Length: 577
Image: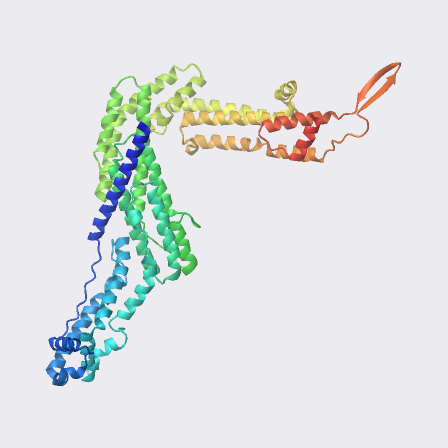
């Protein structure tokens, strides 16, 4: 079918994209290789000749094989100079600055590869130090009592740093081995693959950091590098998506995926999912040291939030224009205004990029200012010709998306005041109704006519008032916009509404009814029917408590209202039925 073909096509494209990302990462990794200089230990030609001859004879090389050269001053001086060169060459690796501190702007991959490659470099140095030529050279110098030349090698490599470097490698290798950074660097899916990769990375860090002395300061640098890697990866994927060109529904999905990534970076304090917060807490609990990480990812998160706000407000404006302005001039004006932002790289996080983004938004605002004037004028005309308050509320609802804009607010202020006064009065009526109580209300008599008992009737009455309150809150939102709780007048109304809403909570009434009902005795004793004779007339008296009929009605209505009636009360009710 067509759907299955589309599914297979999408799957194939996804697989190709993944392979391309992996290939790109491999090429990038080649450029990022940490080049640890190969250590050369040049051997004196005479030593080489002796070693070659001994190997040809199938015996180990001896200092005696050098003959008189073993005591020749000039020859010994040459060997000593060569050993000094060895020390300098070895220290180019064992005294690398990167052993103590990560270079600025280093990547996570570079840190991982450095320690893994350093191990190989040190192994090769040790292999060369144990070679016949080196051992013969050192033995010759020792025989001549040139100990100051050989002491660095006799002490296990301490003075030239081999032992120290190897101890660090052995310790840190556990952390760096199988470090799952590739899953992040080759990700092609923002909302799924990147969060999964971050969880895997932080899970690895927490698990491996338990058994390493990798310095806390270096962990800070590693996390900063990881944040930069994540930022760069997310930027690359977002730039390929063309955020300002895609349709708004697709854009909304993309923004949600970005927020998933930022949440994944933070993670849970206890995990899973594991993230930065999880690892920070782990380090504090284990080492009692904070992790003051400078996370460059924050700038991207802030920019994405700004872009999301801009596009949402633009979409709201465009939607209102399409539905309320008959002319196409306003639509054209807004479309032209949007072009001023599309031409800018909105993901450029440099200072120049931030300046261009700000200028583009100001130009956009200048373009749409005329359109807002048209909308404000049309809104005032509609409000002026409205026949009643309900129609005004409906008109405000049509334009509610734009009620945050200053020009629209200014144009509708007098009508807003008028309608908010109406809402306040309506809420006052509800308040008076509540104070009167259900027992004295007309609703109680209506409930009696509908055969609804007192407790269920009181709950229905309270829920009706609560629904009316919610309706009035919706009306306030229509007048002041979605963020009405942040408005001064909205906050005043909220202070008036919330106490009443809390008083309308029927949980206490229901619990009290349950307690009273469970304490009551509904057992019937004696005969069910009793026939009596009064003045030659017989009558039948039924031995039955009317309250059990009321109980049945209460249970039926309360269950319909969604209340969880205790099983013991339900059993009594069933027996009455």
